[in-house]
Length: 343
Image 1 (spheres, rainbow, N blue to C red):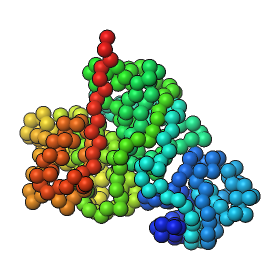
Image 2: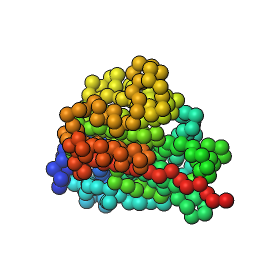
Image 3: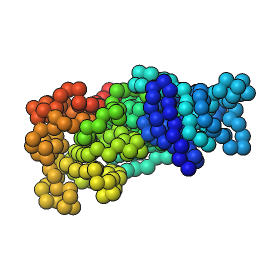
Image 4: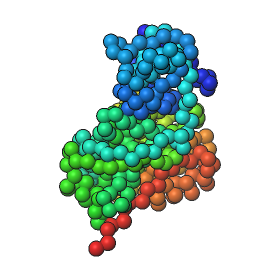
């Protein structure tokens, strides 16, 4: 059964199924409710239930007291609607309102995605969750005080684990450690979320995503968030790598392109000879040039999200400006690879 939730004072509304929590439904559709542990223990997701009714199954969550109930409060991470609802919640409007936390994490899973890219899944303590916007990043805090920044590759509605994509960099001591020495169940300390690279979901313009290498990580999280939210404007993912072997998880955008008529995936190879690889993988050259080739009349009507090496991000912006894109429609995450530790 489906119910409608009206949010006050913003006036937003969304539909939810009776078998999901109010918080899960809100996050899935892009409404940034506050939350913490998401298991009923911390109370960070409390809000006022103005009209309607909810249930919590057989056991009331520990963070919801009799006094809370008498005041009309509900714990939205556990509450399931039994009618249409009108709730009062202070929505988080932008990244500045998200709490930056320093937390220990355990390496839940480590897997090689390609010859030089590892995916880490990090698990937070049981009573903690990190609220973030799709596309933001975290810092890994090293014992010597240095930090290493990595983009979040998962979407906010799928936050049981933190997903990172880490590429090995020649001479990079931390990425070498991740490749060769880091094991599952090891502990890493993180700080975040950080950054202003996230989906502006209120915009209805067609979307161009331009990724370079592991710049695919935050783009992946943004696209998954956009699809979960039900955005159906045209979306184009251009992913620039050197050779076909440098793609990873590319079965995912291929699946999106196969089953979603509004989604298009264009891999671009800077060093691969023309004609090599599968037929759909024969675009060569620079990734921003491929975008311009496909839209010769300009891209003024688009929002562009670019993530990857600074040279790609800056070259893309310079080229797109000449084809009608304004600065306020170009959202970017340019990351420098770590500097090798001096001997």
